[in-house]
Image (cartoon, rainbow, N blue to C red; front, top):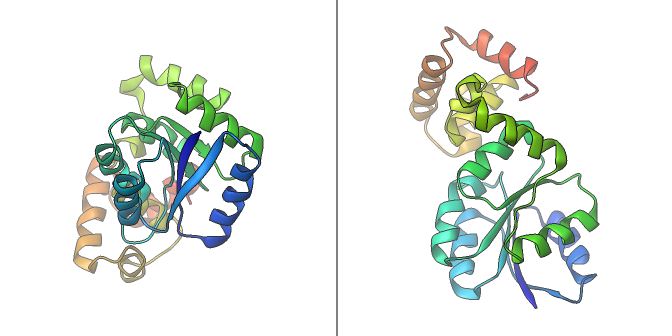
Length: 209
């Protein structure tokens, strides 16, 4: 029996995932988490074989918690689940140790296939992502500017692209306005840009906003 832990802050999403999992008699749900911190705690307590980890959760994102989830149970397989398109986070997640990446728009049977594949020691990516990964191995120096950002910096860039103010971003990420300003400065430096207008234009053009 494959033991699965679901980590997502939306109850409706967790219920949907539970129903899909219940269709497979070789998979059992052992725990549910609503935050990154809780995902780490329950991974240590319940010893799942596969953790389905949402990227965007309050206080601590799934990507921030990824390393600690893996430390909590050596050998655990982690499938990152996200509402974000693959080109925003997928390669970043895999580089940081995830075993697979799937968008929430994927068909239910693909989720079950991914769980089985990860449990068997494989990786799960879509065909389009597999091609992008292959290209990234030979074109690492040609990465898009936003791929050099940290996970939190990318979040800030995305929010800037959506027209959020520093105060609004600080409130959404539960950090101080000073911290947001620091992230913004780092983003401008890394992307060789001068102002928010350029960041916003970039985010929109790249489909990040």
